[in-house]
Length: 305
Image 1 (tube, rainbow, N blue to C red):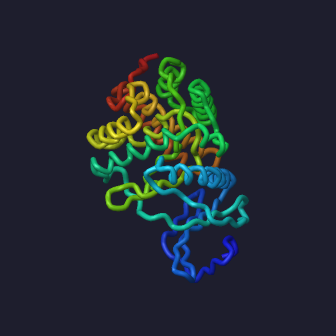
Image 2 (cartoon, rainbow, N blue to C red):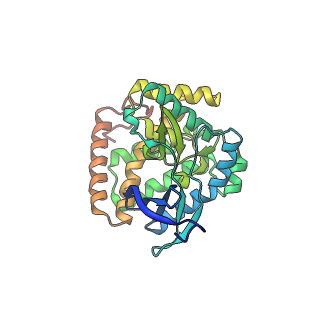
Image 3 (spheres, rainbow, N blue to C red):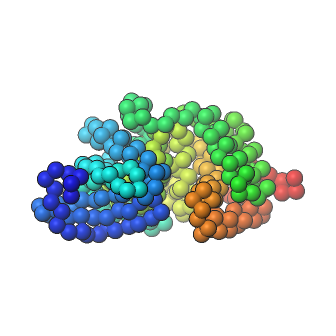
């Protein structure tokens, strides 16, 4: 493998995963070491991979200082690919992913601790890595612009569009202190060993913004499990999670369906478009039946408007 001087690849091994954005595979070298090769399949994925590589040295420094309780991707080599950008080669991290729906309360506390440690990273880390920075109002306006983009090309159900616009125009809801966030808290990026998080991957969407972004994907957890995440998060950060953060997290979770539709249209993926359209209809039906959704939103919209 020419990406790393002196590395003599002798075989392939699991994992092998292909998505719309990446091909990821395992490699075994002549010294018995296990490596991961992650290759972008489009320009968006290539940009994300470069961002993850850029922040890695700074995260590693935070790890050495004891500020992070988990390992990270440690880029060791790169190789140009035909689709554009570069493939990244790094030692295989220790641990395996676990679906969030299967975690215990103890493991939920690990998730809260991991997220809090990311949100406590200093601005120096984000500045040196060149992460995007969004103030609270810039973040709010950005979400509103994305909603309008999605509605323009995908015709979001009126009930949802009004609901989301009202929340995004309520500036009192968007008073928060921006922090470093992971940006893509999918369970596939959290590796586990012995009930503890051993590594966190996928920092390609990291930015300075709303901490609710990282809480949002966890809202579907059972109540006791989610409460354990939040309790641990609060204890680690030393700050309380207020109702506004949970409301924003719910809003962002709902808006992710509109972004999924927008992605399907831009990528001309009809399967994604169909899935997103079905999700939007189902969500509109659910909101009409119960505007509070009980899971977090504190705003509502009159369906008759």
